[in-house]
Figure 1 (cartoon, helix red, strand yellow):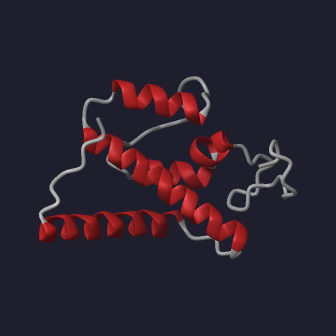
Figure 2 (figure 1 turned 60 degrees about the vertical axis):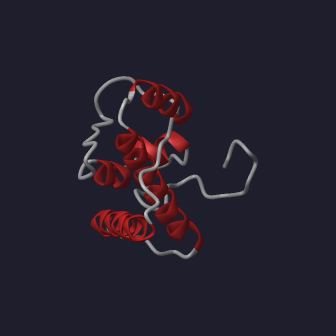
Length: 125
């Protein structure tokens, strides 16, 4: 946001660290790490090289053979983004376990709708 010349505080509203890059939001923020860990993906972004969100997504989606894993990744990123927006625009900072619970609830509701309407599975390829 700062690179796009939007006037915003440069401090992360969740971790109170001095970084509001997309990489911080998605991977480096302690809040986000606590959302990734309990997911079935169990990513640990503290290990290895830092990468841009765009590069990570491009590479991850290329090497991941399982559509469910891709959907899980998108779900986690979506949850991180939604709760970042609540923190920024509504001054509501949720506990990471609340975010994980919300994501699990969203997945349960989707599966219920998919089963009721016989939508079948989503293919990402």
